[in-house]
Image (cartoon, rainbow, N blue to C red; front, side, top):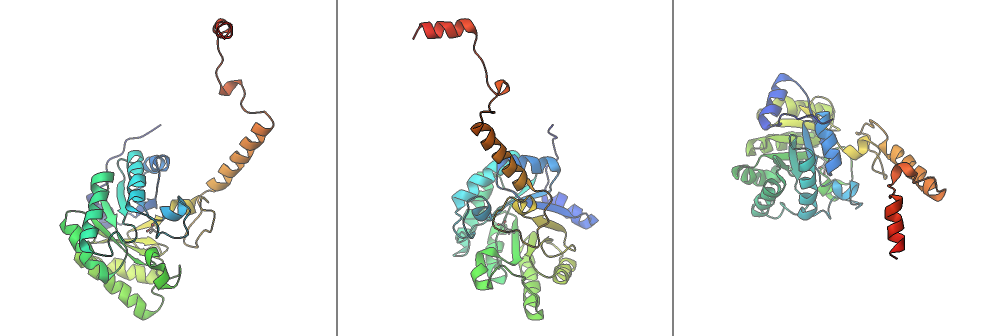
Length: 284
Ligand code: KIV
């Protein structure tokens, strides 16, 4: 049974934050999963460029293109018409110039009916955020572990462990907020740093991915939650169910049943009336 939900807007989200009600946020890349997330009452969906790894099997997010992102985001929007939908700007679609940034952000809004976009980076991206917001597009920042810069960061590891780096992240959050970011994702920073940034935020929602409980809300990668990414499960992910195992067992059973001629049975196909079949064979 499907249930119609009220559309989630920035007003809804800021009102939740004001009341201290945590916001739920998940990644999603396809229509059936989007449908389930909408039904489950999830507040926000990120069509992350992580789809390069989770859906397309690349080793990093860097090969993902705008066309990949638009195709998947459109499918997600069809499955989740009322969730607050954020399109993730892929590698080199905003780094080279503010013009690129505005044009590609605009594609997410016009072609995939997004509610906002997200891009990675601190103070060096403030002019991109400013220009996108000036074009009337809500923009999310992303600090801490930023996968598009994983080579420069020295791998997928905790960011802001030391006081100097933590201070820089805290300053970056303020700069992005002043540039107009309506939300900032903190990925893999220490919990106390996340708490400090959240307490100091005035006009931005602060969201946590592996950065502790004290943000305005939480993000998880859907594939990590359900055992659907075969290569690894990071510490920050909680596994809520092992769908990967359920599917694998189902696939093995299907393979076996076909091999042993136990599938299909008469419940799984249609017959034909005798007279029609006789007429058919006579005519051959
Ligand atoms: O692409 C993505 O899913 C992301 C998350 C890792 C935050 O940017």
